[in-house]
Length: 323
Image 1 (tube, rainbow, N blue to C red):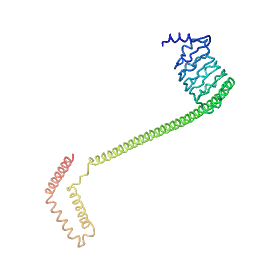
Image 2: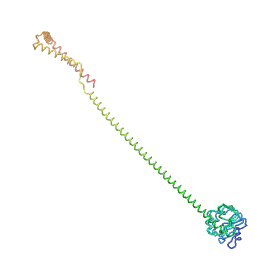
Image 3: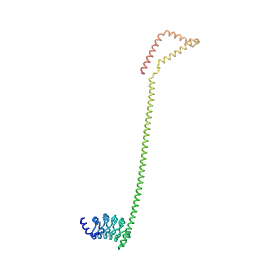
Image 4: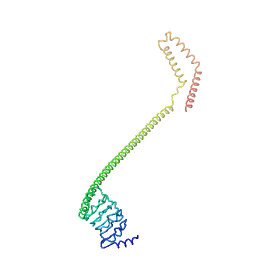
């Protein structure tokens, strides 16, 4: 069945402000078509095979009376409370166990029939028997009151849930702030430790540099001292040493011997000791010596000249070998 044929058939079912779709073997409510006829405020969908109402059914806010008795409804839309103009609702002989919480918002509802539904105990008690007009009106009032109570419980539960979620969120935020504070403190400690490490490294480097500089100064001072010592040693080595030749020593010994002999001879010749027995051989030897010296004067002079030349050559050769 096409949409146009549905509209055409729906027009055939309309009589004044009523739409009669009962006993039409309907399985789905023609919401779109009903929405086109806002003047049709009474809809009869009884005695069909409808198992559920689409969410769009709650947009038919112009409906005043709806008959859904003798169908297969197991649940109603959550937004059923949007039908604020609804005054008469017949749900007799379906398979409903509960009603949506928004049912409490049907403030215009004056008549309700929930007989022959497997309702929960509390809802069934609120619905009552609904055997006549008075009981059905009473059913509407009691069910609305019951659903308002459920709605309040749901609201309280929602508030509790929101408060619990808010508290959990607050605790999470507190934990997050504490964690961030710990992380911040940890980063701060790490920065302080890093700074202290760099400071120690810098101090160690400066100490090492100072030690190297001190060692360098000590090395330079040692080199300077060693250089001065070497210079002194070299100067001392290059300073001319007195020539202590064997010939000079012999000359000194000979001179001392001659001086000694001369002293003894002078003492024996010029003093009163010449008459002593000790001086007699000395005087004789001196006299003999003078006599021999006169005879050997030329030979001695030549010997002295030879010795002087030899000593001079020896000194010059020694100096040349050192240079």
